[in-house]
Amino acid sequence: MRVCEAIETRTTCRAFLDTPVSEATVKAILKGASRAPSGGNLQPWRVWALAGDDLAALESRVKTKIASSQIADGPTEYLIYPPVLAEPYLSRKFTVGEAMYAAIGVTHADMAGQMVQFTRNFEFFGAPVGLFFAIDRSMQQGQWADLGMFMQSVMLLAREHGLHSAPLESWALWHATVRDFLDLPAELMLFCGMALGWMDADAPINL
Image 1 (cartoon, rainbow, N blue to C red):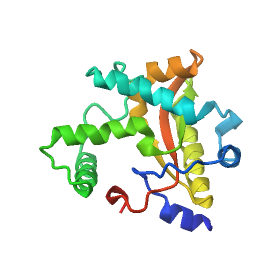
Image 2: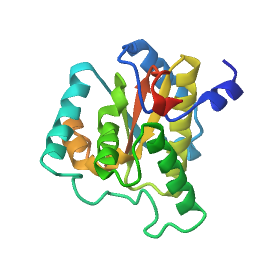
Image 3: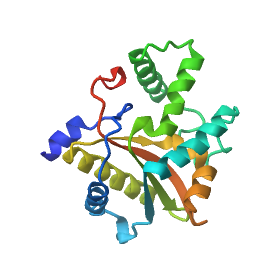
Image 4: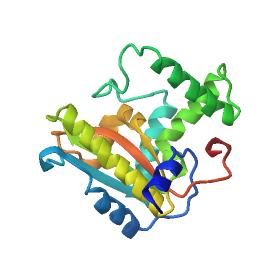
């Protein structure tokens, strides 16, 4: 697959097949992505890959908390969006959200339906692999940009293997749960998760 094809076909997949992805493939993707640029070659990030029972166990922890009406561990450790989202960004965010929910028949007034779909983030949308990206909390904007380039490389290499992905900043809401489960070192801040697997091409939300 050419790079332009990987870019053109990369999309945030929100419904995956349960077909396994081999450990060798995940390792190959992460190794290839390590070629992404990093100022000063700091590479101040760590990646965890979960599958099988480990992935199910973490998802179960979060599901249990959501079932008890908990929606997060508390304030996120970084702002996913600015406190006041100005135009045109607010409209862009609203428009894409409306289109996503419309694809699965969830209306703007259907808050319960929206919540069901939102919690799918914490099931990695059914993907067989969940990745977690953390960065040294002493780093600055330049190194966060480097992490973004590394993650983009992961997503494009996934396409080369016929896979799809979904970067999930929503996992920052459960930073304490993930920290405890993965035993993250104190100096690392969880940035986000990422679903990795085979797209369910027949799912309306992916059309």
